[in-house]
Image (cartoon, rainbow, N blue to C red; front, side):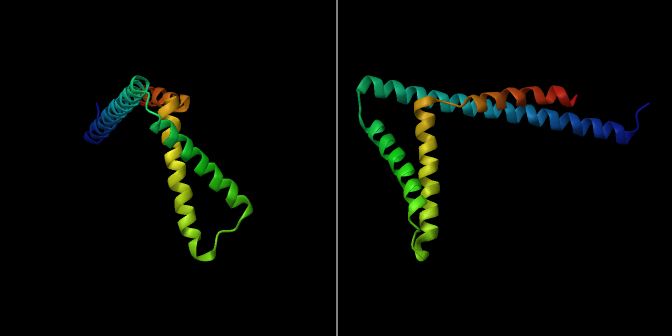
Length: 124
């Protein structure tokens, strides 16, 4: 016969598993929403033949890698070092968005979702 502590521990474990399932479902919903947004943006770009996203993507890529290359050869002034670091971070984040827009989610993200889906089964 199980004690009250064992029953409580089992209930808590089940709640944790249920919470993981809800979190996974939420993550999948967000991923589907993001994919839908990218898809509709790509369709709009194809239909309208707007050069703006391509120009912005090229500018972001050139700016990000240009700044990284420049930092390899030139030391930023002492007073603006933090600003340069913040700018590299912002450009890096923007570049990741560009890559996500043009190439979609990475295979690593899909694998992570697959592993998270299996996690509750492992914990049982």
